[in-house]
Image 1 (cartoon, rainbow, N blue to C red):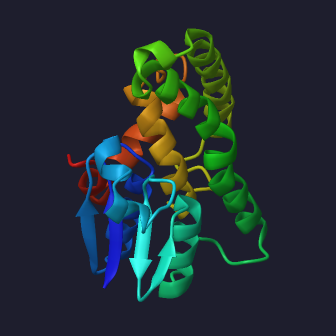
Image 2 (cartoon, rainbow, N blue to C red):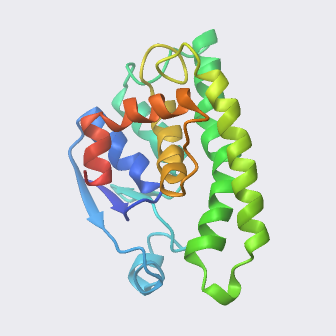
Length: 203
């Protein structure tokens, strides 16, 4: 049985969302986003850094959300959520698949840490503010990319939308999605209407 360790509003949203899109049979292990839970002796055996997501299947454990997504797509042989290798469409897909974690998540992570997660005495407001400025700059770039497109890699929904859609969920929670980026807003609303997204976010 495939196990997915999940806490609300974390990167594990990507994994639950993907499993629902693929119609996989999986066990969702619900965790509180709390150091007492994530740093517990039992969970550290699954993820030594005490983070989510984690995926466990037949002795295999993977902790990186992007790697889990790629593994599950390959394991299931899915061809609907990713373009064929070696095609120009695949190149665009890979760009945005990795953009989500490598480019947009770092400033969002800084906002999360220094505005919400860390104890107040350990927060640095300048880091949170810089994260906000950087994230808005990236979101405006994304708004231009989405002009005339329904999905980030083209006209078809793909796993790149799952990777990026989670980032936009955080951006919305942080109050960063505004009328100044209408294409991003429309795109996020389109993703949020998907039943699998609603299941992954508890809507």
